[in-house]
Image (cartoon, rainbow, N blue to C red; front, side):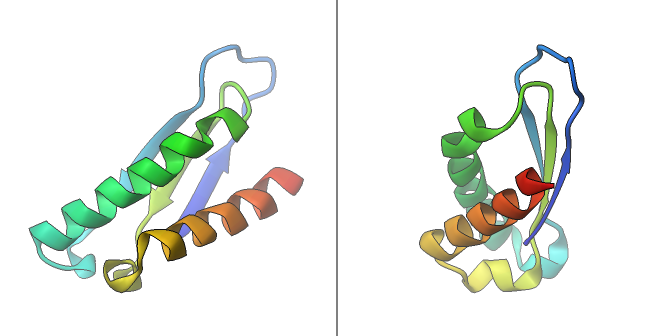
Length: 85
């Protein structure tokens, strides 16, 4: 999973999140499952994102076999690294 984060200072809009889950992840059933899991993970972390930020999550093919907990750990690690800088 790759996470891109754009933070606009001084913007009062709520944070937004977009997802990219392409065919390399698997068939439509697997892609939808990965998308639902990532959406659930990011929904719980929206309050942690700065106001006005835009996050884009790109699922890699290994995301298809990852559990919810593994995806959550990946998102937490990526957010920690991105929010530090």
